[in-house]
Length: 256
Image 1 (cartoon, helix red, strand yellow):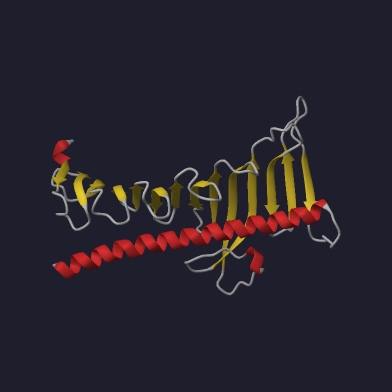
Image 2: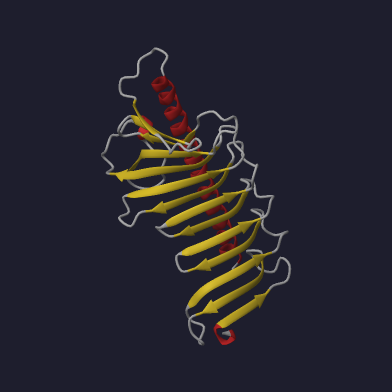
């Protein structure tokens, strides 16, 4: 095992990336094909407060200290397949602690899962189904999903999961916003010996009067707005991480 590994130790501020030690595992004893590289960073060198990074072919996993500006504790990407972010608990106003995006094998859709902590509305999990349409597609503005890549991304469905209300009142376990159908499905927490019940609502003919359908329509709008806001923040974080790494690369190249 050791003959296929390389261990490097650096003095403080010696490595331009701020690496304090690096362990690389290779496929062969000639050490020509790297399988995994684990780097530990000097806590005083990295302005982005990265403390550890694991890299494998098409994958990287970053770890950060509590000083990270976006409150990120971990960030992982598997090229073309998955990306995830973890945040410090209680650091974000919306209670988001983890966000995972899985790209389907066909590449035309993805599923985003968001986990929340300590929210007053009891929301603990949200799942967003997103599809990628052709560039010339013209979906409703309410369905559009912010994106930095090609194609038009649209929100097809949003599932929200809630913990059971503590006041004993009937409470929603899962609320599904079927955006492309203009409808909502609610599944309620089981009460005593009664099994979970489900109710479907159509929002296509919601008028101006007071009705639960009107309230659900407002809930859908608020949910979609929250989903888009978080997505825009994620794109900003990704760009910030890319820009920071590019500055390091440019600095290294200029000093060579």
